[in-house]
Figure 1 (tube, protein in one colour):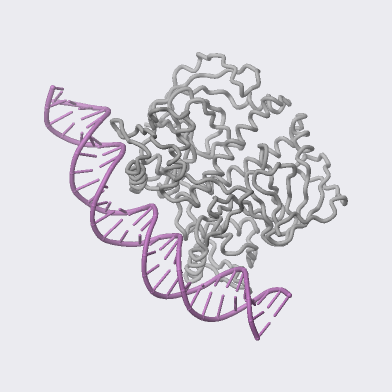
Figure 2 (figure 1 turned 30 degrees about the vertical axis):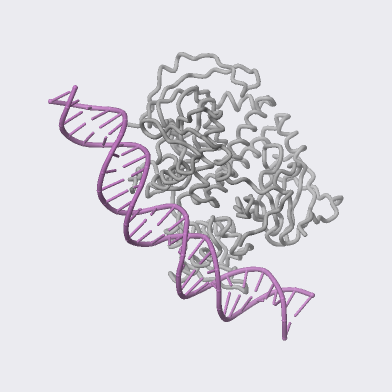
Length: 235
Length: 235
DNA sequence: CGACTCCTTGACAGCGTTCAACAGTAGTGG
DNA sequence: CCACTACTGTTGAACGCTGTCAAGGAGTCG
């Protein structure tokens, strides 16, 4: 149905997230069922969101249906921090998801009043967003399918704090649309890594990954060139 | 040699760019010859730059030499506005380039003091950067070679304000590294558009483009899905 | 049980890359 | 001025990575 489904917004837990540098702010808790749209592209950006539980994908869609997922957001992550007039992505719950929502007005009001700790935190947040999307440019423009999947797994492993079993919340098509591939290619890359002994794929829907060889994975996920050792242009 | 080559930084024209909302600031003029490095990845970001003349490319490089250009900057554009500790891109002059440079400290000092016009301008600048890079994600992840080249030409046409003859400052390899393609594929796409009568390629180095059919070009450069007309997923 | 979704795997095709040849241009030094 | 070299761009041919199409198994849900 993709309509906004929220719990009663009147129960507002007071949660002083460090985003505000000690200034207490009011956040409302909302719940979205799997595949529910949290906000749509070009909608006014009135709130910012922090995930308590679940996962969210933000994406753009071309007129013929091709989709590019810009990011996955996991518990603790803050999203919806667009600086402009409205959202530039659509946000959907990957699985049943609980978020805390705060009005942007209060946030930027504090920022405009010279609340430098809050301002710095917001800037750091935007900087992280920018850094992620810029690294993703390099992945989408210049890496092979195997490198992309390895980079994705390494990213998830890091963000989930290297669990013994990595439970991916998203389906193969989501991964594919995040990496600019097809779901078949993602599946094949996972099989390749499995055949190399780098990981195991388990779970009822094959969505649990056990990493046996993190350095082997890192060998597939490329690193940036260092200034000390200038890269020879291959071609 | 790629070392910083600057004119005497002591001559400082006073230029109140509207970035500061009327607050006058001091900018120094610098000149960089073709292919000179303006700043390197991970260098401290002490200055911001506005282009007076020429063009600049910002890029990342993988350890094996694969390069992804994140953006081209043209006269009037401001770049080097990273929020974090240091630059996350390398910036090079595409051709002989003149820039105005301002110290970041003065800029963010005004921002922290609650200078809301300046703060809003900086935010708008970062928002534009974010918007461009997010659209580029969609291009790199989900568009064909012809669509990418058409989108690039449409972008340059718009930014150069639809000149009769579009003089591209960058070589084919730069375009390819911006679009995630090879230079041969870029050349082939240009030939295809030429054979379709959409443009002509002229000039001594084939770097002058005359657009005959902008709507024909727009037909190749895809548009985002609209909310009113929900996209049927193709596959 | 039946319909549906999700995932894997195989066969094949195609788009873009790779490799190569050639032409035009710019820069350099005699 | 001209030869020489390096760089840039176009085009052709072949290859290969990834997409497309298809089949089948496993899990989920009513």
